[in-house]
Length: 98
Image 1 (cartoon, rainbow, N blue to C red):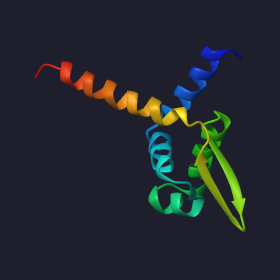
Image 2 (image 1 turned 90 degrees about the horizontal axis):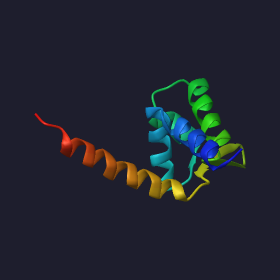
Image 3 (image 1 turned 45 degrees about the vertical axis):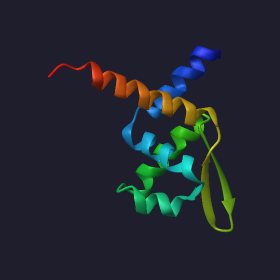
């Protein structure tokens, strides 16, 4: 696996709106999966699948605290990546002609 492969894996993982929202939420602070379950209107199984994809891409890590599973952003560069994507989206919208 090379750097391009890793980049593609990360972008694919972030390519779903729910996963992107999860990562943005977890950038603020680590959270219990129970909080994520309340925040996102998806079944527990569906949310677990999204979290698994983000973990496998190396974006998130999890830690069991007591009986609760807590998730946090593992790759600190993700915050810069998402900030750059927000700027890129703003630039995109500024080029649209109405």
